[in-house]
Image (cartoon, rainbow, N blue to C red; front, side, top):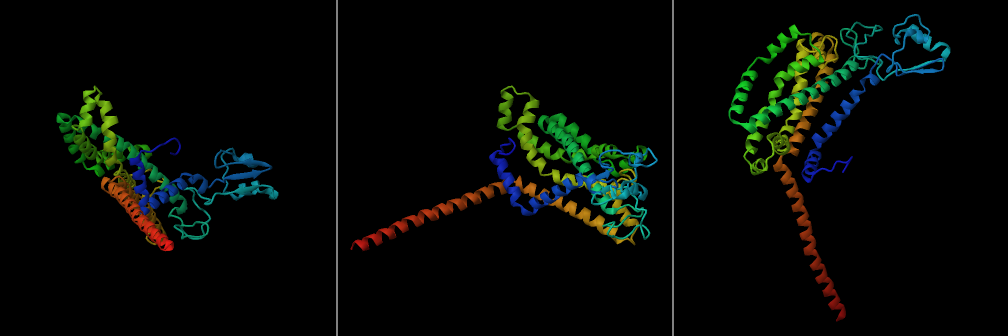
Length: 383
């Protein structure tokens, strides 16, 4: 029991099976650590210092806006902390100091101090080099990873909610409701999704939320078939009939009785849906129909690698970042699928029970032998 949560024995068994899959378990830990790490991207890669000490006062530019006049400058605009003039103002007479993030570049910061033409190779200043506009690749990778995962999570969440609701209505009511919904889904799924997205992107300026809504219009159908099949199977079972006989409304029966059983099959698909959402965003950004130009995106990084074959570090960074991220998600999906597989769950429990029974049986057989030997020794001593 942790934080007031007392899982059922079935949930404990599934968690135990998930942890037994070492590849999936460690993939989940690594992916979660990378995502948490990327959530603090502003504190890891930024062209604004974490802290500045000037004339005995402490400033936090990464969190707050400070004009150049706050440090003795001439302009009311925000101070450019990478400007040597501003740095000299802060560090005058050695009394002030600047604490920079681990990577002193934001995703859109252009390094004007490059000694070679952009894209520049990896160096001590730019760990993964720069792109063709002089922007730090490591900073764009961190921000792009966070953006891709957040986009994929939101798209998976919203699409799953709509898909589960549609599948539940179809499967529970059946009849004409199921027939009409199925025809609508068949027509909607037969539309050329990519062409429609290209047309909509040419009419509407693409943005994070706009692109999320456009992709959600077509991605909600992935779970409809699974949920529909579960509701079709459960609608005539005894516990559903008993709930109807007791006068429970259809909404309560669907949410409280049938949906928990249908979610077992749904949860196993979620990691793979997340992988598809991230891949869709990457593909659209690569084609130029995704996020606005300049946004930190893994697809834009792939496009940079394609356009600059003379800079292999761009291709290696794009390939390994996508390969590692998608591989981790696939391994997590396999572990979740195995954890919710009833055959493997029962097999694991049976193996544990068999091992326990075997140990008890061997202990029971050994005890009489020991007693018999001890009795024999006692008899011989008596003689």
